[in-house]
Image 1 (cartoon, rainbow, N blue to C red):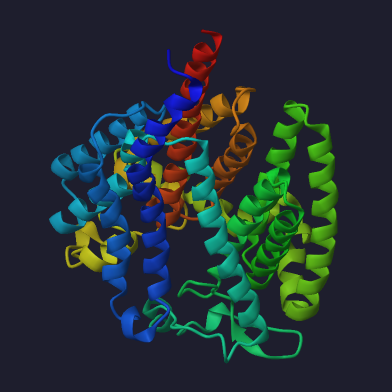
Image 2: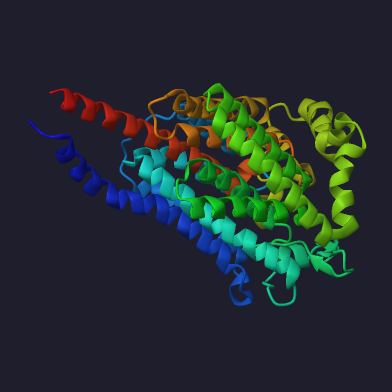
Length: 455
């Protein structure tokens, strides 16, 4: 009869190379993003961006072909079938190249649902993924803070998409309290205001680490990363990210209450109040009236008025104007960077269309069927996370609460910009797939060890 210890050693040996695929993937994603900061490399921006998605496609072929069935997998297959049907059936493709590129983009973003679920992961693997992401985004947030204080010293290449635009990026500058006009902090990205995204991850993942980490110094560093992240969100002046962050914290608190972790709720709320007061005062002192007015506009009028003026009118136009016109899609490759890179805009019938929110993008790409399918995938993803949260024996239960909050925040962002046609969308499916697989495998290992212990 084998002891429990004899079961664990071969599991670790099998897990090691697969561990490197997962973490190597996210490391390369961050490396490609960071390389764009250097002017000598930034001219190859298209290649670097395509490389991030190509790697995800490559892992579909490289990783072994058996794995755990994630609840969102069937919906993902339906989505890909709809996209294939659009490619071969719809008469108004911008171009064949643009149509193929759009289909590959959807596949690359959904790919982690397939290749991650083939890996032998456990709770330790998931935590290392979290720490890797948190470390990068915390570093990016710190760089964002330094860009506010030392804008001439801590300065990197700015994306040509920004500098070659109509206003040459002037609309992305802010005026600080001392009167200095600078680009919004970009952090470790080449887009002014990009530090807001890193700030969100630093805030969310830092909260999760602070709630679970036993080492006091490490917990304090996690709390500090929350403050740095919130500061970057303020100075980047991205109101939607601030709202998403607050929504995520609210969901975490509600889930903790549901789990009857009262002391953790009290600890989180108390710390959040202190960090919020200190960081808000810090940000408004440095950012001046421009930053204060930007966020005070959220409460200057009624919430429905603010929402409508910000992004609500795009949703209204999608429902009242575009939906009757394109119930089954408008043809692939007619919006976004795919159209800019690969579209043929000489045909007046397939002229490019403007997209500001994800729901518009789904409607144009696949019509009502794609909206239903992707909504089903997102609901299934939340259901998969809730299974982890509901398992009181799972060591990832609290991380399930963090990822559930992240999911709800991502769904909220679909009303703000096309998150699921970007690298952020790929990270969404990566985190969800990794959590689900790690929780399933850890639960199975727990059952095996318990059964062996009883013998």
